Image (cartoon, rainbow, N blue to C red; front, side, top):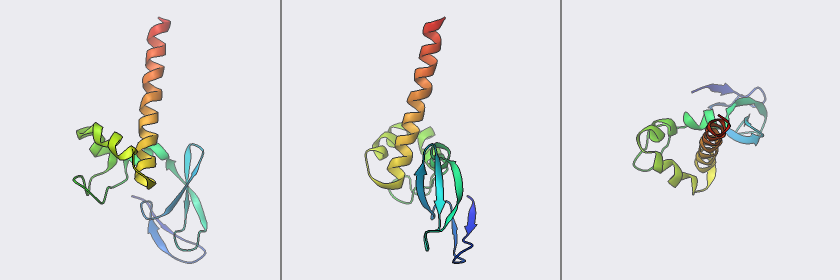
Length: 109
């Protein structure tokens, strides 16, 4: 997990504790203390895979680990609110887009 230090207020934080703002396909990292723009993170889909859940039966696991072991739980989390739900929604959208591309490719053959 990447660590950051704000140039404006000198606060230290990591990707998970940073404030995230959606900026198209990418995620903008903003200081959680003063709101200063830090930079862009990975895509929402990539960042979501590495996001560690801090609640429930999968506490301490990343969304990527949960998806590999219990994919239905990702759909369950996507119905919620907040950062985790948004990451899960993006992941499901990405999987659906990839599946549709594969189906379109098969139909063209």
